[in-house]
Image 1 (tube, rainbow, N blue to C red):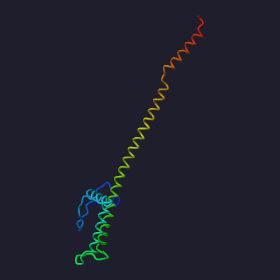
Image 2 (image 1 turned 90 degrees about the vertical axis):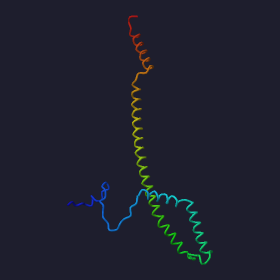
Image 3 (image 1 turned 30 degrees about the vertical axis):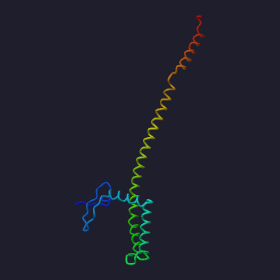
Image 4 (image 1 turned 45 degrees about the horizontal axis):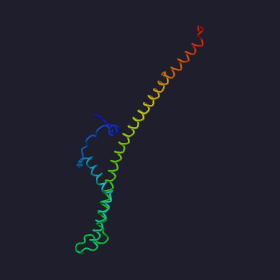
Length: 166
């Protein structure tokens, strides 16, 4: 029989052990649920949603205020409307948070890629700088035509002044 320590059970590089539960848990695809939550959160942040919600509330209040008395389902304090809006807000907040978490994960990956790209660019720039410096040093040691001509003229002058045969 093996015993597991707390460190072994909380490791993220190891799969979790399957736990049997008396209460069945619903199974869902977290990726598709995340995409759906992003779509909903994106819609909740638009002017279209605000217009739709405003029209819905105006129609709701208008019908329950001015509609036939027998067909009004939510009289003046509009308790059912308040309940509906609270329900919508209680679902919207976690969906928006889930979408923000997914965006944070994407931003983190993008940041890591940008940082790696910047490091490669910096390394390439440093390499090219060293190569250019090496080429400059090598070119300063190369004899140019003008330098060679001036040196030969100097040697000829030295030979002419030291030549006693003439």
